[in-house]
Amino acid sequence: MTTSLRYAARSSVGLLRASNQDSGYAGPHLMVLCDGMGGPAGGDIASAVAIDHLSPLDADSHQAGELLGLLRTAVQDAHQDLMSRSASDPALAGLGTTCIAIMRSGNKLAMVHVGDSRAYLLRDGELTQVTTDHTFVEYLVETGRLTREQARQHPQRSVLLRVLGDAEGDVQLDESIREAVPGDRWLLCSDGLSGPVSAETIKDVLTSVADPEAAAEELIDLAERAGGPDNITAVIFDVVDTDEPAQTGAQVVGSAAQHRERADAPEPRTPAAKAAALVAGLEEGGDSGARSHQEEALAALADSQARLRRARRRRAVLSTLVLVVALAGALVLGYRWTQTQFYVSTSGGKVAIFQGIPQELGPVSLSHLVETYSEPPLAELDERMRQRLEETVSQPSLEAAREYVSTTVAGYTTDDAAPSSSATPSAGATATGPASPSPSPTSSPTASPTGR
Image (cartoon, rainbow, N blue to C red; front, top):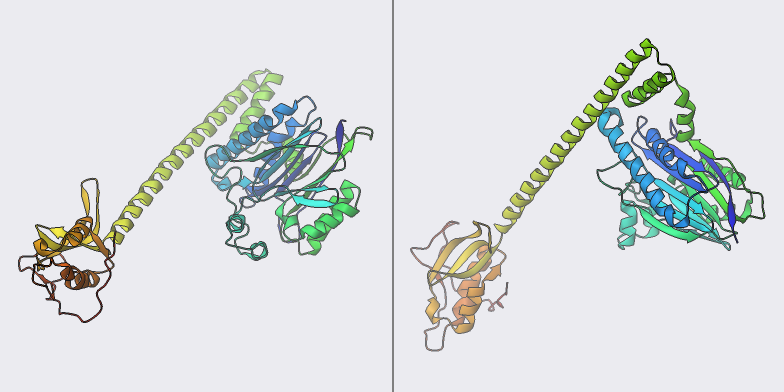
């Protein structure tokens, strides 16, 4: 049995936002939803750019085995496009977008996903959230640090861990292949819908409203009645038998639709776009005036590419500096921590206290001698205590280390040696810390030795 899709895409700016940074696309073989971010100068561009890279895939010429590869390539191209725009235009710094894309070939659906926009599947009356939010709060839920209810109210619930356009290199996508089962209904939506409207209410609407367009409009209306704090976009499609008339034509909504309407503007917005338009005009014309336009176009393109290269170099240098500073800071903090530690061992044939930890970092020792003890003599300690001191005994403070020497170490003399009631630092002790008075005998119980 072969299938086709019935679909609809709807979008609203919401009640509190000044512009719509969501974009949606619905066609016979492709569904896409993107939620842009980066302020009014970037978010709407980011989501529209992603739609522009993905929409050419809406065709019936692709084999099922090609779907994920095609989606992956288009999304990575969109990611690199966004990185280039951000690097070449300071006004676009920080732009990015979530993305869910589902592509159909025959009875197979391929899906890629990044960010916190969601895909829901209604099958046999049961609603399932197919995607996992790539957010900090979702990570806390998955690791058991938050409950699902706590996550809904968490102040950092919108902090994203993965989006398009946020970092150099390939973006990490969630990918899957599924069956296109007749009777299934799918919903792709931005968090402007899934946030204010509960999953139970979404299920009720998807179950009770048969027409995809009417269902999408009803869900957007519910989100607006719940306050409409964000842009709201819904893409709904039903998997149907081919016995029913196949729907044709694509629906583009949100920022992508607005940018396509502006595509016919006479003056391109970027030097690269201006260059492309001028070169295209030269190919159509060919007069002498057009040649000067060609030179202008090529100069604009060269300038744009040079600025992009400079921006990339600056970002690479900055990243290296940040890494070096972070590493130096970690080393300083680590060394400071080692100097809060003490241990008891031996030095020069005597019992000794060291500050730090008994390790070396290349040529740098992470400990130094504080003081040595003539009493009890090391030769008079039994084999167990000498072995323990060779392996070192960690102590939380200098006072604790002195107490360990005067009570525990002194109590492990051999049977033929006179018992030692206290330990006294030798007159010639190395003292890089404060001078240590002779400890007084103590009546407290003997402390258990602590291994390293």
